[in-house]
Image (cartoon, rainbow, N blue to C red; front, side):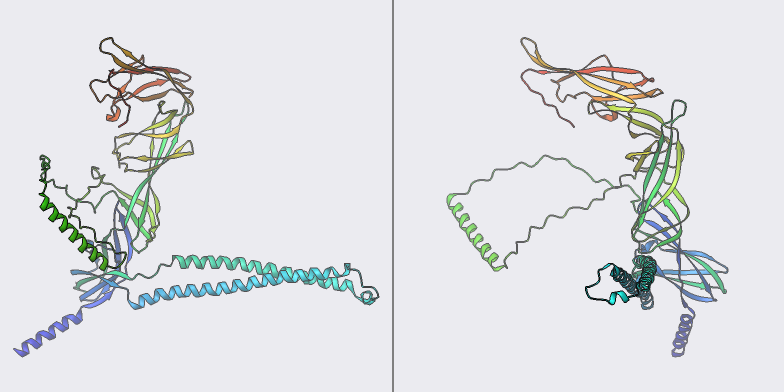
Length: 567
């Protein structure tokens, strides 16, 4: 039996010795970014001998979701993956020292360049001082000679002035050379400072992935490591460029779809193949469950019987004693320490569903070319695609609030990918006119997008009558009448559809009667399920003017008063 155990131990040691551990570097090859989260794909090449091996990937970020890590690939021979283990670990000492050494190298270079800059600045200052002194010497021949002094007659001023001119030239040339070198040195310092800023500090924590494999023959393998990260996502953005056209040229709308991508995974995605997906893998996969809801009467408040006088006295004495004990306990506490607030009753945690989970679609956008995205959270904007649409232009006005006409373009998406909710930047005939928001739009859905004030459509709003009175002899009632006139004129060279929006008061009581009056009849009422909101729709030819006369009358009992409000 002892020989059998020893032999088994030798076989185990032999098998463990054959499982060679190989640390394989990998690089980010492609990334799929979701609206919340991302899936990262790393690639690596390894050469393996026949036998068992442990391949270690030590460059997966700490934020990788452990349950999402998958390893696959292709090999030139038969390669079997036994298991995949992951754990959080710290950088090896050599890796940390290498990163610190790179930063130290850049910092030493900066110190050297700054010392050179100080020397050149001193040289420029010395040249300027030398030029000032030489200039003072050049003024000597202009000064009057002292009385009784004959030495000035013997000075060789032409030779002295020639020397002064040569010295001035040399000082100027030295100053120019120093300034040129100083300018070049400042560029080098700026580059070094940017390099030091972009040099991210070494990662302290990471995910280590160990893959246990067995190769039947010597082979080469291309391995792929996939994992998901939560600290990434993208938001849709749009550029809407409208060309209003002319009498003979139809309007055109160029709708450019963009995406703003951010990620804080501590790893940089350099020159990767990028895809953007509308899927939400982090959202719930099933609908929430409903629980039973009950309704019952509110509990009645029962009167509390008053205590007898003696009982009340005993209760008061007991309260005083308790207050005295509380005061003595509070005095024993340190000054400024307040009593702990009562612990609230625990409340059940509720999950809030996402606002756009009703979208019946998923789309993936493949970004052209290679893309680099920093892991520091800096936004990266990319273009997804551009739609060329032929919009229908119309004018909308709400003269009661603003006597201006606003230009709208009706969008009709053809078959294809939908529009996600996002901000849109609006341009009309090449001029930026503002920003707006696009809701969730599926293919085939229409949407009106505003493009600012249309000065070629004039709107006037006038109050023709405001009158309040009483009617009836026996049972009197109050009346309140309002009449308006809206005038619209089209100054465009082509016909323009116009929509005028207004509202009627809505009665909240059957004794209050609201009656519409006027020649113009509204085209639609209760627009978008808003009670009382109505529209007048018409089409104005060039230079055509149209007048709308309308109003309302309110009647209510004379013994009561009414108020106006909004909801």
